[in-house]
Image (cartoon, rainbow, N blue to C red; front, side, top):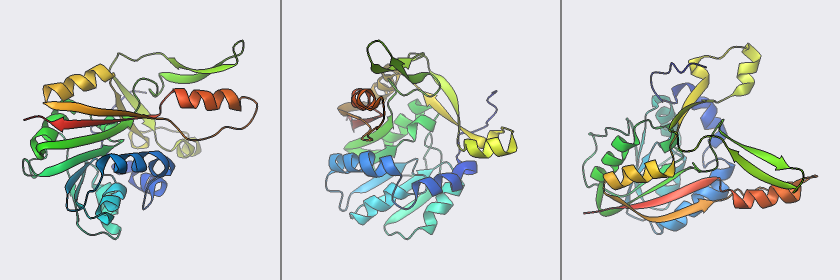
Length: 261
């Protein structure tokens, strides 16, 4: 499929995404991502926090409930419109491109968070430059991404070794930077038997070395790294191998970076 999308906005997928995520997050948000990130953030009362790629604001609302002053920014105006429909306090929402947030003041935020949104941002060098500008001295940037070492759409797969009775990950391309089209609602595509630009988003895969290169370039020091494994449990003939493999190949990666002075 030829990539003809002009931007990476989720405007066309906003309603579908809102249905999946809801008021307080999807399954993995609730079970893995949010508990881990809240533990790392600690007490956020009276902290000023920017949610970068905030979508329809589910994590903004969670932070607000814990006393934080929150700003949510997303490229999709439709997602921001949905976010504003949910009851909330101490939250401001803006439509904006994470590569240029000139409407926000420098040295303004204690924390910047990004949950599964960096993978949809094309120029993370520019994004990290803005993160540095917006953070207070020694402020922290927390971002969670799909683990780039093991979970590359269309380029990584589960396979099974019948001789060893072992499930493993096959990785076809890791070091290459990739623009990968992701179909958001395949059932709808099957119904109309046609695929258009409105039916997919773009995920940008980068190896860890490239991510760290851009962090270093923008004076963001990595101070912690956590790998989060799926907590789902398989049943059936290959359950033992599947459950073992699930604990060995992390699903998400959380990185904490501090603004160096």
